[in-house]
Image (cartoon, rainbow, N blue to C red; front, top):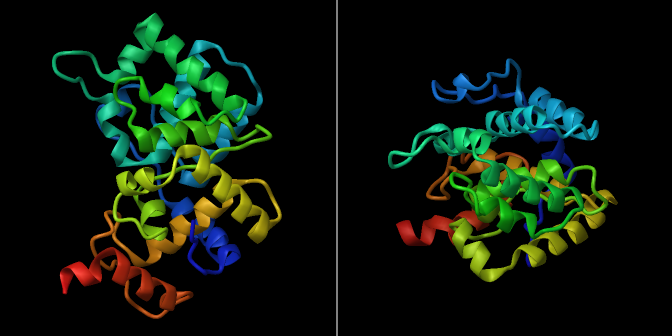
Length: 239
Protein backbone atom coordinates (compact mmCIF):
# COMPACT_ATOMS: atom_id res chain seq x y z
CA UNK A 1 0.00 0.00 0.00
CA UNK A 2 1.34 3.42 -0.96
CA UNK A 3 0.66 6.18 1.57
CA UNK A 4 0.89 9.83 0.50
CA UNK A 5 4.09 11.57 1.57
CA UNK A 6 2.53 14.19 3.83
CA UNK A 7 3.41 15.66 7.22
CA UNK A 8 1.52 13.18 9.37
CA UNK A 9 2.30 14.90 12.67
CA UNK A 10 0.98 18.21 11.34
CA UNK A 11 -2.23 16.80 9.91
CA UNK A 12 -2.91 14.65 12.97
CA UNK A 13 -2.79 17.76 15.15
CA UNK A 14 -4.84 19.67 12.58
CA UNK A 15 -7.69 17.15 12.90
CA UNK A 16 -8.21 18.06 16.55
CA UNK A 17 -7.89 21.79 15.84
CA UNK A 18 -10.33 21.86 12.91
CA UNK A 19 -12.51 18.79 12.39
CA UNK A 20 -12.62 18.00 16.10
CA UNK A 21 -14.06 21.42 16.91
CA UNK A 22 -17.12 20.97 14.72
CA UNK A 23 -20.45 20.45 16.46
CA UNK A 24 -21.88 16.95 16.69
CA UNK A 25 -24.66 15.87 14.35
CA UNK A 26 -28.30 15.40 15.20
CA UNK A 27 -31.67 15.58 13.46
CA UNK A 28 -35.33 15.33 14.38
CA UNK A 29 -35.18 11.51 14.37
CA UNK A 30 -32.01 11.06 16.41
CA UNK A 31 -33.02 13.68 18.98
CA UNK A 32 -35.79 11.32 20.05
CA UNK A 33 -33.02 9.26 21.66
CA UNK A 34 -30.41 11.79 22.70
CA UNK A 35 -28.62 15.02 21.87
CA UNK A 36 -25.04 15.90 22.73
CA UNK A 37 -24.13 19.52 23.37
CA UNK A 38 -20.50 19.78 22.45
CA UNK A 39 -17.96 19.40 19.67
CA UNK A 40 -16.55 16.21 18.19
CA UNK A 41 -13.54 16.24 20.51
CA UNK A 42 -15.79 16.37 23.58
CA UNK A 43 -18.09 13.69 22.20
CA UNK A 44 -15.15 11.41 21.50
CA UNK A 45 -13.83 11.91 25.03
CA UNK A 46 -17.26 11.06 26.43
CA UNK A 47 -17.41 7.82 24.44
CA UNK A 48 -13.92 6.76 25.51
CA UNK A 49 -14.70 7.58 29.13
CA UNK A 50 -17.84 5.45 29.10
CA UNK A 51 -16.13 2.53 27.39
CA UNK A 52 -13.15 2.62 29.76
CA UNK A 53 -15.45 2.06 32.75
CA UNK A 54 -16.45 -1.32 31.27
CA UNK A 55 -19.98 -1.05 32.65
CA UNK A 56 -21.77 -2.52 29.69
CA UNK A 57 -25.41 -2.57 30.76
CA UNK A 58 -27.94 -2.09 27.98
CA UNK A 59 -28.68 1.57 28.66
CA UNK A 60 -24.97 2.38 28.62
CA UNK A 61 -24.46 0.48 25.37
CA UNK A 62 -27.32 2.34 23.71
CA UNK A 63 -25.97 5.66 24.97
CA UNK A 64 -22.58 4.86 23.44
CA UNK A 65 -24.24 3.86 20.17
CA UNK A 66 -26.08 7.19 20.03
CA UNK A 67 -22.90 9.10 20.79
CA UNK A 68 -21.09 7.28 17.99
CA UNK A 69 -23.78 8.45 15.58
CA UNK A 70 -23.64 12.01 16.95
CA UNK A 71 -19.90 11.91 16.34
CA UNK A 72 -20.07 10.16 12.97
CA UNK A 73 -22.10 12.76 11.10
CA UNK A 74 -25.03 12.79 8.66
CA UNK A 75 -23.99 9.67 6.75
CA UNK A 76 -25.43 7.65 9.65
CA UNK A 77 -28.81 9.41 9.71
CA UNK A 78 -30.73 6.45 8.25
CA UNK A 79 -30.03 4.47 11.41
CA UNK A 80 -32.78 6.57 12.99
CA UNK A 81 -35.30 6.37 10.15
CA UNK A 82 -38.04 3.69 9.81
CA UNK A 83 -37.28 1.40 6.86
CA UNK A 84 -39.91 -0.21 4.61
CA UNK A 85 -42.61 -0.25 7.25
CA UNK A 86 -40.22 -1.42 9.96
CA UNK A 87 -39.05 0.47 13.00
CA UNK A 88 -35.87 2.49 12.71
CA UNK A 89 -32.75 0.30 13.15
CA UNK A 90 -31.99 2.21 16.35
CA UNK A 91 -35.38 1.25 17.80
CA UNK A 92 -34.91 -2.35 16.68
CA UNK A 93 -31.56 -2.44 18.47
CA UNK A 94 -33.30 -1.38 21.66
CA UNK A 95 -36.36 -3.64 21.39
CA UNK A 96 -35.15 -6.78 19.61
CA UNK A 97 -33.14 -9.14 21.81
CA UNK A 98 -31.48 -10.82 18.83
CA UNK A 99 -30.44 -7.51 17.30
CA UNK A 100 -28.90 -6.37 20.59
CA UNK A 101 -27.10 -9.69 21.00
CA UNK A 102 -25.73 -9.33 17.47
CA UNK A 103 -24.41 -5.87 18.29
CA UNK A 104 -22.81 -7.17 21.47
CA UNK A 105 -21.08 -9.91 19.47
CA UNK A 106 -19.45 -7.16 17.44
CA UNK A 107 -18.56 -5.28 20.63
CA UNK A 108 -16.93 -8.31 22.21
CA UNK A 109 -14.76 -8.86 19.15
CA UNK A 110 -13.87 -5.17 18.90
CA UNK A 111 -12.85 -4.96 22.56
CA UNK A 112 -10.31 -7.69 21.77
CA UNK A 113 -9.12 -5.83 18.67
CA UNK A 114 -10.53 -8.52 16.38
CA UNK A 115 -11.09 -7.13 12.88
CA UNK A 116 -13.96 -9.59 12.34
CA UNK A 117 -16.11 -7.27 14.47
CA UNK A 118 -16.72 -5.18 11.34
CA UNK A 119 -18.50 -8.06 9.63
CA UNK A 120 -20.62 -8.64 12.74
CA UNK A 121 -21.67 -4.99 12.97
CA UNK A 122 -22.58 -5.06 9.27
CA UNK A 123 -25.09 -7.86 9.90
CA UNK A 124 -27.37 -5.34 11.61
CA UNK A 125 -29.87 -3.34 9.57
CA UNK A 126 -28.82 0.27 9.20
CA UNK A 127 -25.10 -0.27 9.81
CA UNK A 128 -23.05 -0.06 6.62
CA UNK A 129 -19.36 -0.74 6.21
CA UNK A 130 -18.17 2.80 6.90
CA UNK A 131 -20.14 3.16 10.12
CA UNK A 132 -19.22 -0.38 11.14
CA UNK A 133 -15.59 0.75 11.17
CA UNK A 134 -16.58 3.68 13.41
CA UNK A 135 -18.12 1.27 15.93
CA UNK A 136 -15.01 -0.90 15.63
CA UNK A 137 -12.72 2.09 16.20
CA UNK A 138 -14.38 3.22 19.40
CA UNK A 139 -14.89 -0.20 20.98
CA UNK A 140 -11.32 -1.31 20.20
CA UNK A 141 -9.72 1.86 21.55
CA UNK A 142 -8.43 0.25 24.76
CA UNK A 143 -7.38 -2.96 23.01
CA UNK A 144 -3.78 -3.96 22.43
CA UNK A 145 -4.80 -4.07 18.75
CA UNK A 146 -6.87 -0.93 18.12
CA UNK A 147 -8.73 -0.54 14.84
CA UNK A 148 -9.47 2.49 12.68
CA UNK A 149 -12.13 4.07 10.49
CA UNK A 150 -12.27 3.59 6.72
CA UNK A 151 -14.47 5.94 4.70
CA UNK A 152 -14.48 7.93 1.46
CA UNK A 153 -11.94 10.44 2.73
CA UNK A 154 -9.46 7.76 3.72
CA UNK A 155 -10.04 6.00 0.41
CA UNK A 156 -9.47 9.25 -1.47
CA UNK A 157 -6.30 10.04 0.44
CA UNK A 158 -4.97 6.64 -0.65
CA UNK A 159 -5.86 7.29 -4.30
CA UNK A 160 -9.16 5.42 -4.55
CA UNK A 161 -12.26 7.25 -5.75
CA UNK A 162 -14.62 5.11 -3.66
CA UNK A 163 -14.40 2.99 -0.55
CA UNK A 164 -15.60 0.05 -2.62
CA UNK A 165 -12.51 0.33 -4.84
CA UNK A 166 -10.25 0.37 -1.78
CA UNK A 167 -12.00 -2.69 -0.35
CA UNK A 168 -11.50 -4.59 -3.62
CA UNK A 169 -7.78 -3.86 -3.48
CA UNK A 170 -7.22 -4.65 0.21
CA UNK A 171 -8.88 -6.78 2.87
CA UNK A 172 -9.74 -5.36 6.28
CA UNK A 173 -6.76 -7.23 7.72
CA UNK A 174 -4.37 -5.81 5.13
CA UNK A 175 -5.60 -2.27 5.76
CA UNK A 176 -5.19 -2.46 9.52
CA UNK A 177 -1.75 -4.09 9.22
CA UNK A 178 -0.56 -1.38 6.82
CA UNK A 179 -1.93 1.43 8.99
CA UNK A 180 -0.33 -0.02 12.12
CA UNK A 181 3.02 -0.23 10.38
CA UNK A 182 2.68 3.35 9.14
CA UNK A 183 1.68 4.51 12.64
CA UNK A 184 4.89 3.01 14.04
CA UNK A 185 6.91 4.80 11.37
CA UNK A 186 5.27 8.19 11.85
CA UNK A 187 4.30 8.22 15.53
CA UNK A 188 6.14 5.34 17.19
CA UNK A 189 2.81 3.88 18.28
CA UNK A 190 0.72 0.87 17.29
CA UNK A 191 -2.33 3.08 16.75
CA UNK A 192 -3.65 3.01 13.17
CA UNK A 193 -6.24 5.70 13.88
CA UNK A 194 -3.44 8.27 14.20
CA UNK A 195 -2.59 7.74 10.53
CA UNK A 196 -6.29 7.71 9.67
CA UNK A 197 -6.79 11.07 11.43
CA UNK A 198 -3.89 12.62 9.56
CA UNK A 199 -5.17 11.36 6.21
CA UNK A 200 -8.69 12.57 7.03
CA UNK A 201 -7.52 16.09 7.91
CA UNK A 202 -5.31 16.29 4.81
CA UNK A 203 -8.13 15.13 2.54
CA UNK A 204 -10.70 17.32 4.30
CA UNK A 205 -8.57 20.39 3.66
CA UNK A 206 -8.27 19.83 -0.09
CA UNK A 207 -11.03 17.62 -1.49
CA UNK A 208 -14.78 17.11 -1.52
CA UNK A 209 -16.04 14.17 0.47
CA UNK A 210 -16.96 12.14 -2.65
CA UNK A 211 -13.52 12.65 -4.24
CA UNK A 212 -15.07 14.34 -7.28
CA UNK A 213 -13.30 17.71 -7.14
CA UNK A 214 -11.31 20.23 -5.21
CA UNK A 215 -12.70 21.73 -2.02
CA UNK A 216 -9.75 24.05 -1.59
CA UNK A 217 -6.97 24.48 -4.17
CA UNK A 218 -4.94 27.12 -2.34
CA UNK A 219 -1.28 26.54 -1.58
CA UNK A 220 -0.94 25.05 1.88
CA UNK A 221 0.97 22.29 3.68
CA UNK A 222 1.55 19.36 1.28
CA UNK A 223 -0.39 21.06 -1.53
CA UNK A 224 1.96 19.47 -4.06
CA UNK A 225 0.86 16.04 -2.81
CA UNK A 226 -2.78 17.08 -3.18
CA UNK A 227 -2.11 18.22 -6.75
CA UNK A 228 -0.74 14.80 -7.65
CA UNK A 229 -3.61 13.04 -5.91
CA UNK A 230 -6.17 15.14 -7.79
CA UNK A 231 -4.83 13.78 -11.07
CA UNK A 232 -5.51 10.26 -9.82
CA UNK A 233 -8.94 10.95 -8.37
CA UNK A 234 -10.68 13.25 -10.82
CA UNK A 235 -8.68 15.65 -12.98
CA UNK A 236 -7.87 13.17 -15.75
CA UNK A 237 -11.52 12.09 -15.89
CA UNK A 238 -12.81 15.69 -15.89
CA UNK A 239 -10.35 16.97 -18.48
